[in-house]
Structures are given as C-alpha cells and as structure tokens.
Length: 62
Ligand SMILES: [Zn+2]
Image (tube, rainbow, N blue to C red; front, side):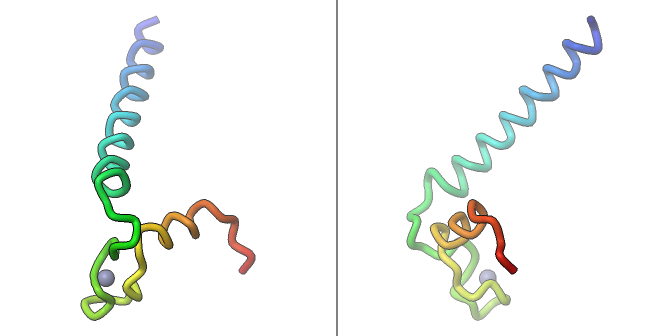
C-alpha cells in the first residue's frame, strides 16, 4: 500500500511538472511567435510555437 501511495505521488508530481511546462511554453505563448529564436542563434529555423506542436502531434511520414 505504501508503494501505491508513493507511485501516485510521483504521478502527481509528473503531472504538475507537465502542467507547468505546458502553461509556460504553450498557454502563455503567442502561437505565431518563435518558440526559440529568430533562427540566427541556432538551427531551429525560426519555427513558431504552432508549427512546433503541429509537427509534434502528427505522425512523421519520413
Ligand atoms: Zn533557435
């Protein structure tokens, strides 16, 4: 029983982290703003938040 409670606590913690990440990187964001930089500082290609998550939710066809 102790193990079950512990596992559920871990689940709650993970969901909490996922929620905070979602809130900061999706909910508060303008979907058409770049999620990283304008593409000059790294190789992200100035991808927007919307584009990032559009790809993430679509199975890759190669
Ligand atoms: Zn970048």
